[in-house]
Amino acid sequence: MRYVVNLFVFVFVFASCKPKTTTTEPEYIVNADSLRGLDSINYQLQYGPNNPDLYYKRAQYYLKDGKFDKGLIDIKRAIEIDSLYPDYYILLADYNIAYLDADEADKNIRKAIALAPKNPNFKVKMGELGLYQRNFKKMFNYLDSALYIDPYIAKVYFLKGLGFLSMNDTNLAISSFQTATEQNPDYFEAYLQLAHIFSEKDNPTAIELYKTAIQLDETSVEARYGLAYYLQEHNDVETALNMYKDLTVKVSDYAPAYHNIGYIYLFYKQDPKSAIPWFTKAIQADIEMRNAYYHRGYAYEKVGDNGSALLDYQKAARIDPDFDLAIQRIQKIRK
Image 1 (cartoon, rainbow, N blue to C red):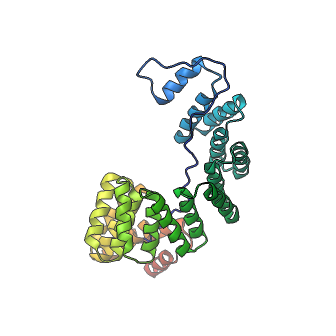
Image 2 (cartoon, rainbow, N blue to C red):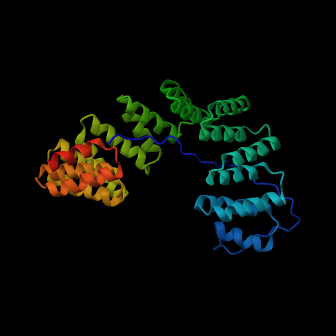
């Protein structure tokens, strides 16, 4: 199964200094050591209900937790109290994106830029939004304006790389991602994108790039799967098989790893009987995985169980009505 690169993974939160406040309420410090994070904020809001910083911080928590309705109320409340702090508008733009409202996000980022025109991060934010909108002219204009203020922002080069990749210009994408790693040697996402590109090019440089990404983030399923898949495609099947099995231990519901284990048993080891339970586990992890049904059907066909094979091919064809291989196998069995 060919690895599909997910290009658009956006994190719409910028670190910023502590917001100023316009409230005249006194500051309250939580004395109870047991209160942390959201509990601490809620406690402080009881005594400082007009502190915009607290609403802003709570909205950040809600955004991470996916509690968008609650968070939107909080960030709007923060802006009502203090409409001159640009980071509030950036967080509001994050919520606009969560609700798929790019136009509102654009308006709020522009407000932040107007309040702090020399802050390059807000221009980067607008460039990121341009990438999300696939408005590449907008994206490059704002990213270049950020570089004019600070030419060493690694994220700018990373976003440019994603833009070039979206435009199918892999050479410029590679150059941009490499520049991102030069500005920030620990830029995991840049190494991962480079690894994907070199993997697609069947370039062995992909191996070291994946290994570097894994060193930077040992928990990354994407990097480990990418390396295992590259090794599988380049005849280091046993290493790939062990890596896939290790992934299923770390992430018990990771369907692609189960599928590829079955694939190796079916096609590389010519052992369809051993392949079937692995395809079954892939299906249990992802009931819409058409390739798992198709390959389990093929394995059933190889062991002489045409009835089970037909059911799996039919399921694969229902998931994807244009799945020609499944349709051909159905017709063959029916004949």
